[in-house]
Image 1 (spheres, rainbow, N blue to C red):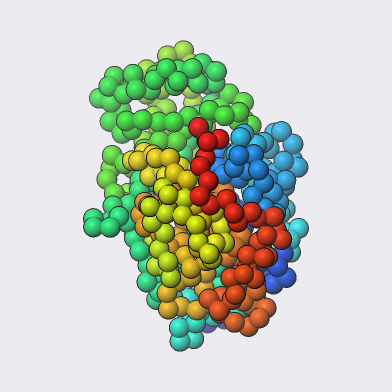
Image 2 (tube, rainbow, N blue to C red; image 1 turned 135 degrees about the horizontal axis):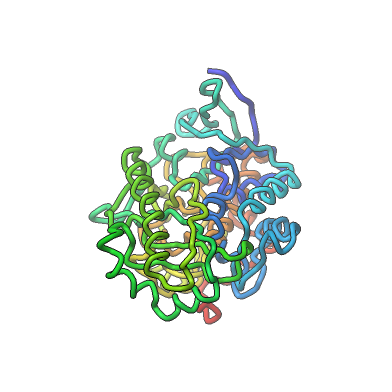
Length: 427
């Protein structure tokens, strides 16, 4: 097998967590390579066609240098690219995809698109890099530190480290959702129609003709860069039952079901939704279904539901999570801002590896409490800084003094004292 190259820090996965990790590692002085299996960066922020990138400025306060860097590169393209709506960055995803590349290049991050990790390189219990799939065959990339930001804990799984999956007891996984954009909509009329419960009123009328339409949908109602268009988020595969996106046959079924569902939703709105939707058209669906939950690492600490609800604080805090405890269209509860301990980024028994984003160490419910994209970027920021430090010092990430990581985060503008706070600003 050929060797593609060597790097200090290898980041697998270019969603919000991977973006945060790569930017932080490069700014921390490490030679950094970011891998993404799709044609663009952003993860669900790009796949979802304009769904708000939540928790980027909670309570209208900056979270730190990495979040602000992404926001500023998007806003540099002007109002057509997007803007801030309370705590969320709302964008035209085609501008976002370019803005992320701008940010990565400005920080000196090397990156590869259309590149998927298919195995881990191991020396005993230490990860030394990854195997990637390319059009020229598999190739090895060697690294001093690796960050798993794949969402599905792929690198962790390939390394042999233990992973968690689903709800304790029955393995239930949160539903997947293929977001869709509709256009030729009377947007103001649609917003009023939804606030008055309009969709609930058409379900019984439309279900016989369009059996795949979900019980509820949610229009992203904030100001949107594309005029006369709305993005729809909904229960997705909830009615289809629990499907596992880490299994090829099940994610295939999720895509098949959801793409037919998108057409039926649009047709049902046109026929039964009244004047606001009389001329509605399906403008686009996401390039892949949005996955809320698959594998997570089993770390030195596993975050719990109680941690989220109580606003738990930890001495080894390296990030915090805000927003809602949201098991997509299954459960929606208020929580407190709570800390993420460094131990939740460290897989048991495998050295040289950190996790970031939705695959950090957490229970099924606790994972749903932290999956907002701004929270994922925050754990990426911490993982990237730690990976750069470990690479520079020639040690395993678990051997770093946490105080050094905390000091670097503080220097990057991260306030690590917000755990335990109520979220009175969140409605």
